[in-house]
Length: 598
Image (cartoon, rainbow, N blue to C red; front, top):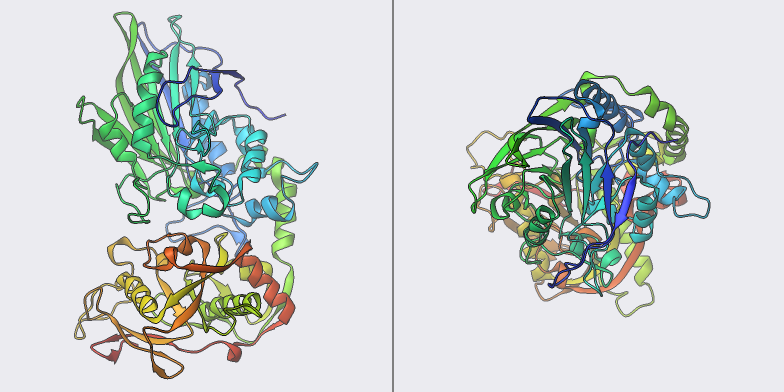
């Protein structure tokens, strides 16, 4: 029986006028016993995680070994559980809450397995490992992340049913009624030794980019207005309902930027803007950006009051602590102080209770990912993919081209040449020589993207390449060439640097961004700007992710519902052997003033 310490009492609140702002059934949660902290003060702690991405154990299913990185971080809810137990012991369990800021059910082969291989949606299907672990640990609430929608709404709804805590999304609205599709908030009652309860409201906000990134799953079913707009509606109402403390759990970074450009009128990373623009918030648990922010204070423009933000590092590497001190002043609780800090999960052992709870599921997934599906004639690595044309990325494009050509055979577009885009999702991907397993292939394509085919002209392809080349730091021909410093210009992540197969081109990094693409050829001749091509492209990019030019508005001639990862696994199974001479070639290179950089 999961050891959740709370029971939920659903109730309805009357909706006020305004688009999409009606309140659905909202959980109210009663805490356990009180603990004395002083005559007129009360202290409590809100713990927070974010971007767990399917990590229960300190295990990397792609390497089939314990997780490790250069900073010696550990990952997983089993580690987080130990930290949570320690905090509850030190603070008193009744004086704590535990919340999450989203991206829970996607990211590892463990979470993939129970969404696709042995799905939780099947009749009599299993309980999702993340639901089992979070229930046992005793989460009080969690915000929806954008990756919650990757497997479709039925999987998300089934996960929601299996959780013993609410999934919150004040700005996830039903597309037809414009009413919340999920509970917007939860209210938690903490008992104090003064006999005066403290009511803590948790408002959940998710990412508007879902409308772009998971368009196929949500279009016509849900809409996602801005975080500031919805917070401005709900926070005053939570205060009027008697909330002494208002915490926002936001699956949204703090930087005020967006990766989807002007495709939506809302900001992707809006947590700091919410703090700045919406009065009445005490703290914000930040998610989505995969960065570590122990404490960040933002002054509200209306009141001048500081709002405390904190973002714990992804995958269960950190646990945020918001420490609150309240004072009883003139018949009401007032927040006297809020501080935030993070705990490192590499300082503790995994909780045996969580390990024992899910050891069978873990073993089953390890066996699945280690299935041999073929052979490879020579080792392929992605380590140099950000600055060199390497065979392992060529393999992705080769398989995507083959899938699109097969799909378009016999159609009006069958005669068009097929190009393909791919990005380096992991610099540590490796497909060894000899036997190839599912995890080898899956480790190359770590996202649940699906494949589409769009029509672009030669001129549009040229623009696409030029936009992608912003990824490089301008480096003069005479300057030292350090591969550790020439990529990720302007904070551009590796997954937003695309290479395109089927054409040849050069990228002159001595030139400023916007003027770098040189000598683009197709079948040995200069690229014809008027020529029409089919571009094999993942759905994230096709829907506007990264704000690459032209592709989101280009004609779609085919789309697949299965993940590219599965298409790759099926291709290797069908071929039986990976022979690099069939696809590996150097079709793009970096130059400086026309001279090859490498």
